[in-house]
Image (tube, rainbow, N blue to C red; front, side, top):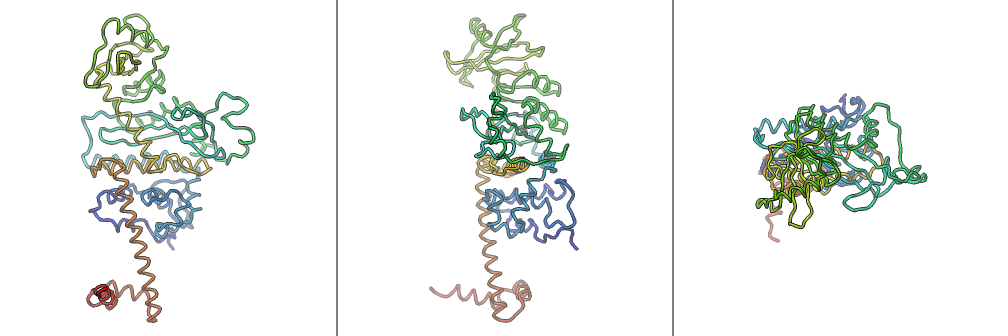
Length: 480
């Protein structure tokens, strides 16, 4: 007896594509190379299991290509005929708190990075940057497990949702996501912790998880400090062999804790900083950022940088015992100063600015992943499914990012459009093939023949010797 009862495998879909359709072919090859069936996904497969968990994961990864928005719509799609799993099978898979999605993402990234090494596509002289940033995941209802009111700096209002903290890597050519955590905000109103009334909290979905399980650990991260989580993510990434020259972040994340942590790992920091009350030691005196900018202006240290179209001034200082270089920039003489900080004091303003500009690659990831891969748009009330859906979206983005790199597409959007077009053709092909099989079954019934023998005869016989092909050809050649 087969250990896994499913006889249909996703490798069948690959046969519909040829190397001429380079984009979609490369994506399917990359998915195949991940060897998802070898990953530890929760508990071991049971002998009575109908579907392998690796096939279920691959099914979720293929959803965007086939324009399937969620599991509910999957049962109505032609892809359902390839892996005949019911929607509840996918729901149980995503709701499994025993699956270590952080490990799954890490192992998949290791495979993708190995392919870059094999293709000799590394940028040896390029600057490699780790990037930290967060984004809002708005939800339509407070009934989702662990949801809270969060302050959106984009919409400038409080809304139901999660804060997603992400760590990514820019390797000189492409951006890849490495890790993430979800967070909720308690708020200032003690009568409504997390922005929810007692009645609303009672209506929230909840479930118990085994202590020490992967899902329980993710729960514990919800109320942890984002600065602490950011430093832990960077340490884990470096511990797993990720190499980087710089750690990039915006002004919200720049602080002594992250600076000290990065320097202890041998990584320099390039970040925006606030023009606030923090003191910087310059020539044996302490100055705030505003005071130092004014001092540099008085000493006529401000210069016009034509390549950046900015007025800039530089100063080497000491901050909390660490040497830093500050770059004050503004667009006009009367404009507001903006502060860029680097722990690599060898950098000039032009090089520092260009390095920091790589931080925008994570913003591109947020936009493209939300548009194409449904990042943060999971409608499940189960917190474990939220983690699963975000992890799957990150894996999809990394695969597309590498496929774009290998096939020289200008944007991931262009590659995504090409992939979905090819998938649409596949869907149509599957429907046509289904119609042909149904037609042959009908013919077999009419002639009182065996369906399997009829298929074998059609495959083995040459078209000129096949009566069915000759009949179809004659009808096609008849004048209208």
